[in-house]
Structure formats: C-alpha cells, structure tokens
Image 1 (cartoon, rainbow, N blue to C red):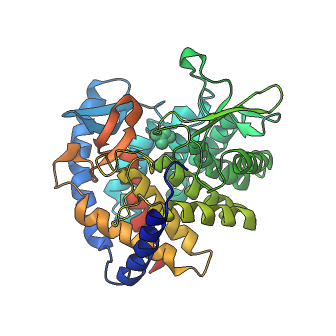
Image 2: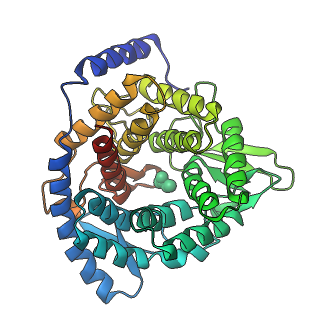
Length: 397
Ligand code: GLY
C-alpha cells in the first residue's frame, strides 16, 4: 500500500484498544433512531411524491447536492434504496402505512428485472423487491427476483468466470470491467436459486466470488476497484480505479462492498474461505493507519490530503451492517463492538437535523470524488445501510 509505517501501525493498535474499552459505553438508541428516521422520511416522501407525480420517469431520491435535490430513474444503480428504506421502516414499526408507501415505490423499480445492461440488479431489485418479498411473501415479488437473476446471469462469461459490471466505456478505457461493488449482486443470485431450485444462479455467484478473491485483492487484503478482463481468454488485462484516489489506493466504499459481499457468501455457502476473506478485509479496514478514531473512514484510505479530505459515511454504514452479520459467525467480539461504535457515532455526529439535508438521514458521504461528484453529501445508500444495521443490531440484542 501507499501508506504503511510503524507510526501508523501503532496508532491502529491504540485505536483497537480504544474501541474495545469503549464498546460497552457507546450504544446507539435504535428506537430513537427509527423515530427520527420515520419523521425525516415522512418529509422526504412529501418531497418525492411531488416530483414523481409531475415527472413521468423519476422514481427515487439519490442525494442533495449544491442545494439541489437529485432524483433518479428506475435504471439508476441507486433506485432501489429508497423503496428499501421504506421497507426497513415498515419492518421496524410494523405500521402498514409504511408498507403501502414501500409497495408504491417498489412498483416503480420492478421493470428493471428485465434490464440486461448493467450488473446493478442486486442493488436495484434486491434492495427493493428482495425486501418486499422477505416481508410480504407475495409470489409476484418472488417471480421478479428470479427474472432479475436471469437477466443478471446473461452478463456472466464462463471464460472470465465473472459477471461484467458495466457496458459503458468512455474513451475505450476497459474491455470487460468488473468492480468490487459487483460482490453485492451475489445475494440476489443465491436467493434466486433458493426460490427457483435453479442452481445455475448459485454456480455463477460462486464462480464470481472465487475469481474476485483471486484477482481483486492485494497482498495486504485491500482491494482494487476494477479488474479488467480479456473476455476471449479470461486473462486479467489491468487493475485500476475509477472512483478511488489512485489505482493502488484503497477506496473506502470498495473495501466495505467486499466485506459485505464475502460475509454474504459465507452465509449462503458455509465455505470457510469466504469467512476468512471477510475477516482479512475487516482487518485491513481497521488496521488502516488513516482510520479516524470514530471509525468513519475518509473516502479513500490513501488520499494524501488526509485529514483535509472528506469522509464517506456510506462506507461506514455498509461496514457496520456487514460487521454485525460477520459477528454472528465467529467468537470475535470486536466485530460487534466496532459496528456499535460506528452506529453510535453516526447517530451522534453525522445525522442531519430533521427537515434539513434534503430530508436524507445522514450527512457526509462521498460518491465519486475524482470527478468531483457527490462529495460530502447525503446519499440514499448510506441511509439504507444505516437502517439495515440498526435493524440487525436490534435483532441481535
Ligand atoms: N456502486 C457504485 C458505488 O459504490 O459508488
């Protein structure tokens, strides 16, 4: 890695001791957080409804940037998070008014089940329809999940052993790009096999996870953002970044996607190698010499401008949710303690006052810093994984 020195390693050890000793003192108040999430999301719904009613295509809020509220179409990778948030609030409150809204906004994403032009079906369909099916057991949602898995599977090439992430390719920069984020699509495939009995989805997920494990990780267990493959031979062409600071740096959200993705792979397969991979990623993240004391990472662990560079709250929220699941598979109590520290700090220092921040819950996420897009803003997926982590935390009590 770019930054690795004794001073950094010592501060990482001190950080670990601090987390362990403060873990019991810092506990997020889940009930209080859901109360304010409900209120904030009620304001959000009013805002979104007006836009959706006048626009024929915008369906979901994504961010609030430069004083402007940004909504997306159903084929945007973030479209499923808002319905997912509504499902999580329903899950917690069991108030059917939230289910009604969740159904309305889920319906607007459903057509993406036929989208074969992106790998993002996991985010779009599983975060919306996946939660819908989990909470209603409506057979219609089941059929959508299976169809989405079929569409996603068309992007798998047995030669490369992985699902192609993007079709867009400005300036011919890559051939068959696979980003670490793609690990987040595997949950949809595992679920589709359970629902349909068709093992082809499971096999694709396993192949993707194994190939990613082989090619995406560095010796220190940080991951590259993108690996580009030759689809004819399956060989790796190059390893680069698009959203991170540098090709050889550790983009914070990418590390979080990897941690979450391999934890899911262990849940679905019970194959120890995935558990070990998740544990190695966790170790990398929390040994990072640049990890701040509050465990909300800078947007890239290796940005030389640290500490004068933005954090990425979305990476922290994804990590907290993944850590809570990971903690159930091992005796390591540190995972849960770190997740609790993250959740507590998000609730105390990164939450927007009600009816501000475009009515998003959390502040200070970073979307795509290299192109100066969505820097130090709220992001719908930060809120989604925050609520998911809060629900997990409640269930684990
Ligand atoms: N999956 C895109 C991102 O994490 O920004």
